[in-house]
Length: 135
Image 1 (tube, rainbow, N blue to C red):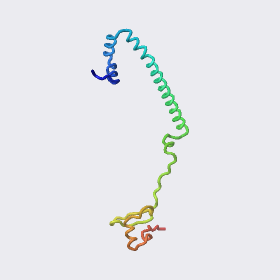
Image 2 (tube, rainbow, N blue to C red):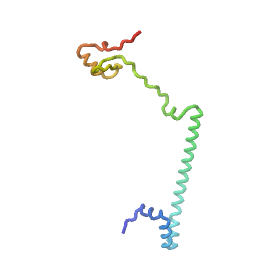
Image 3 (cartoon, rainbow, N blue to C red):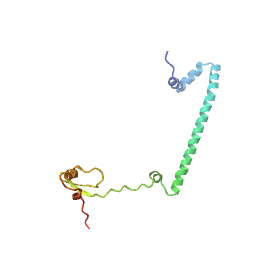
Image 4 (tube, rainbow, N blue to C red):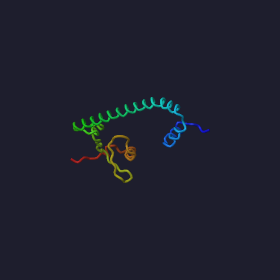
């Protein structure tokens, strides 16, 4: 005999023809007993569902109220999320060097580029690579 699972029962009872057939094959007392057992459980689920829907409705109303308040004060939701972010400012470049014939620049922060380090190792000084600001 096949094992009865909740999914099997659900699949069977989801078809109206099966329910009609089940009712025709069952006696009145069994169906009344089944009804008396299921009715309180269904009522509890209905009440739980009603409360959840009411809570969701209140939450949505509060959300709309807050969005209206934010808009009325001249803000957008993005303004509140991002805050007062200042744009990132790139550091000015302090050094210019040649790397395999290509001119590159370095801000002086972080690791010394290999091309500059090789030149320093061979006797040059860092100041030799400084970008001269014209005045």
